[in-house]
Image 1 (cartoon, rainbow, N blue to C red):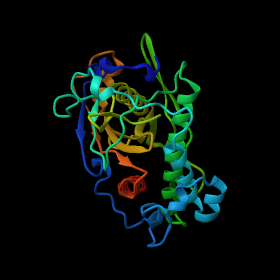
Image 2: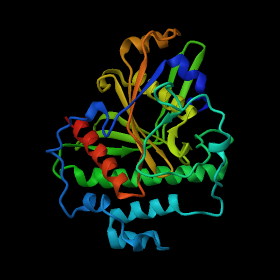
Image 3: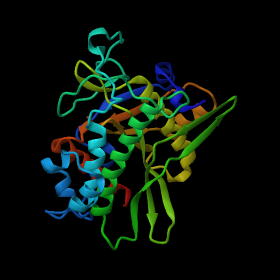
Image 4: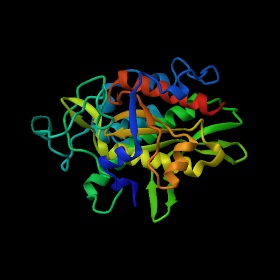
Length: 320
């Protein structure tokens, strides 16, 4: 069974409970940033500042790179995600015609309502990497992944000390499996972060995973993580924990979720007892607790700033 085929009912079986947090995930909220670098006029400072109007014009990627270096890649990727295209999706009437059980975070674990820095147009939900996904949808997801990759690499390459013996790096997609008797679960993430030493040894391959959707989904003009996406991420992190062995970070797995140009961070806490019960085909007696930040709009500097701060704390925590 593919993780991307899971639905709302699977969240009940997994006993998922969502806890909104702001602005950082508990796992790295107190991380020491003293070892990281962030010069006043460096790339990270420019990333969190207001964009120059010229970066939003019809300019080519190589022109932006020549003007802004690696930051130009971020602006180019952001333009690809935010600009209207011939195949763009029309605004839906979901707010008027929604027939959902309840989006209130205080009364349900799913369809998580997340506060954002600005209002967002209501659009259709994202799609995952499954058969039957249209080329247009795949392109939109790939653009979101590319944007997040460029933004993360800008921070990774400039926040970490040049002479460090190990560093957090971007990694390609990973395929994970878990044999549960008559079922085999398969999950493929959209890339992630790993920890590698100067000797080339990967000490941790799952510092964080990436899960992308083609665009953000909203309810009453507020961004939400919808049930299918949450179920997909939950099973992905279960497979990560099952394959992590002794390298698991305090029973937690971090997922960076991007939908269009909106990003949030999630921390899934899965202890050994929960995983053992699941392997034996039993319904877990404990809850799978998920902490989630609000969504950060990468199109705005007040969204890029907390995104960069979360990335910096994740890096600092993972290098200890």
